[in-house]
Image (cartoon, rainbow, N blue to C red; front, side, top):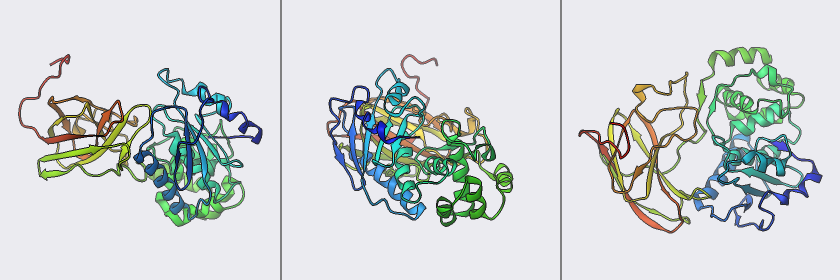
Length: 371
């Protein structure tokens, strides 16, 4: 996350392709939102942004008492998010920037595998606690409390203590930050953001031991991966019996748990599976996607671990398996929680059925697949 000099703010309206129409399209309790794209955000997008802010307020024992102006861009089919971000935020950027003085957040929505919007929303909440905390503490909180999952980093905390962007391993700081939250809980973690001095001084004053002692414990005890603090919080897919799920889902951009943006409209349901088996899916929707919910990983999990089934844990944020309208799709699924997604290219309200059941028949081969 890049912090901007005040003079830069005057140039921010010149976001690539956005300068013709930057009026605010959405307002929530804490946000005014403008977008560089015509596709609408849906109620689920806005509710999720607010929920992330409210969760951070609770964890940091603070209150965001003002609105933040948010500008969201989408680099388009080229996927060139970096050049668009650079135009707005300066050459050294990870795709988002926050100007605390003017309360303005800019974030790209299509950087692969990273939720820059959620990360950016953490910064104004953190600033409500402290505006001069060291970068290691601030970026650690912004990445650690954001919506994405975290994997054990390649760098050590001690090596990052005195660094700032772009040299700071921000996601490594976020991983260490999540470990601290898990180690001692919310109250002490909130105190860390209020501690004075350098990152070393703040950590040692808050936790009562040297940073080297903390780091040794971290290397010994930290998990390989931390899930988002609230993973897969959508409603459960209606379960008929121990082997069958069936629901008629009303999908509307104005409805809760409907999500929008340039990729189209989506609605999610959660399925919890206790026993590994083959499961069949059918739907009347254009596309049905299934991905495994992020979860804490005590150790490295193989991408192709057969015990986890076809939809495995990986470093990817979304590992999706499509089916097609009114056709049967069968997946080998291991125990765990899964997100089932109905996906549409347009935003008209509609209603579609999703059915899922334990499958004992021969596994069908999809058109074009190798048997």
